[in-house]
Amino acid sequence: MKNGSGKTILVVDSDHETRVELRRILEAEGHFVISATNGADGLAMLDKITLPSLVMVASRMPIMTGAEFIDHLKKVSHFSQVP
Image: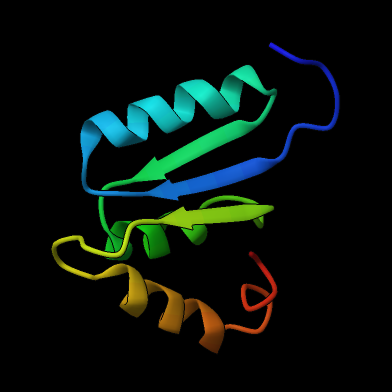
């Protein structure tokens, strides 16, 4: 694990293996990773955590797609600047 200024990253993907692999890679780089299984869970997670430095979201997911998730983020001013 690298030392330094690790960022909080939210990973939203319905595929378990993808979430696990992204967590492994990002944590090895010193980041704090939070994950959600779909867009709706991702939005709920955002209410419980500090503002993430980055959100990684899959395009195809059940319940709420990645595009729908991003549309919701854009409507909330403090999330609209999160890459």
